[in-house]
Image (cartoon, rainbow, N blue to C red; front, side):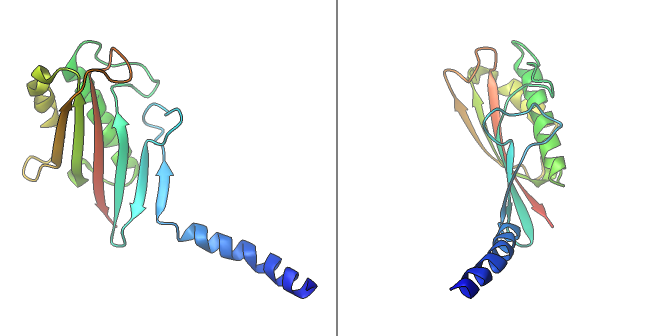
Length: 155
């Protein structure tokens, strides 16, 4: 019995370490954007020849957590895309790696302002898939837009 327990205690940490190394999911936060409270900014999923990066909804906060563009959808959109760009760069990618965005706006009549800024950041020849939803409210009254993003980065 002692020999069995010794063998278990000897090899259990090795097995646990191997399991951690083979985990295809890695959560991370970029120091280039505002630190999140209670969630991860992004998750990386190993797909073999590439990595999928799923970003939490990004809002118009700078690295210190200050709102950018109070009352200005264009400036808020620009800050959000800058945040997305920084997180994707942290994962080793570029904005050309974006494959999907989901946009939540409190005022759909401002969509052209969003599009004008978006088009400065995305690959217009092969734009990412997109979903746009008007919502009555986001997590703060002064935040008028939130964008989720997904990127696929080749290894």
